[in-house]
Image 1 (tube, rainbow, N blue to C red):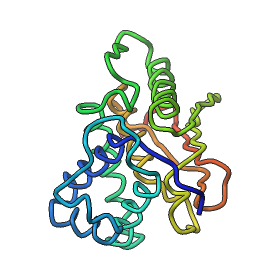
Image 2: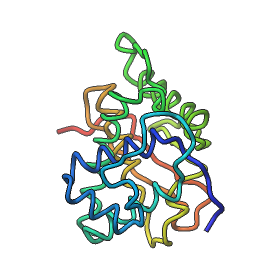
Image 3: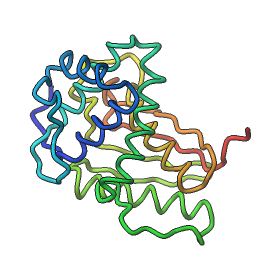
Amino acid sequence: MPEERPLPNAALRVLLDAIQDVMGENGTKAVLNAGGLSQYIDNFPPKNLEMDATFAQYGAVQQAVEEFYGPRGARAMLLRIGRATFQFGLRDQPAILGLAGIALKALPEKTRMKLILDRMAKAAAERVNQPTHVIEEGDAFYFVVEHCPCGWRPEHDKPCCYVTVGVLMEAMAWITGKVHRVEEVACIANGAASCVYRVAKEAVVT
């Protein structure tokens, strides 16, 4: 296990708000108990940027959701929680997403996608203690996270950061009005140096 890494209260709060929205109050209590975080039952962290939460706690909550639903069921739930995390973040904590006061609607779609990913990466690095950068290639953007809560979770045999996948899917839907495929192509929980997410530039045809 890596040594403790602090995280802003707001980042953990947004995740717990999203879990409660998706799983309900009783499901959230069960997850907090299972994750060893019973101190947050009916007592979520405050909505501020004080660094009182930790990456280990954020990872423990996700791991508890995974164990609650089992590997197969957890993927769908964690994606939903990720999408809700983006919406709660946008509404309550735009600073941790880097989206405070953003106005992009007039820009071309691919420019908007790049800008939003860049803003989110910059906010992750500056406000969430999570060094992150974006690489652009011909058909996709790659969102590269150098420190991830999955580093404090047990080893997995395949990528497991479905909350972040959901966050990025919802961010792309919010900025383009379309569905874009997001796939975690490398994961620290599988032994990779970074968690890497491929965001397809072309929308999924529905």
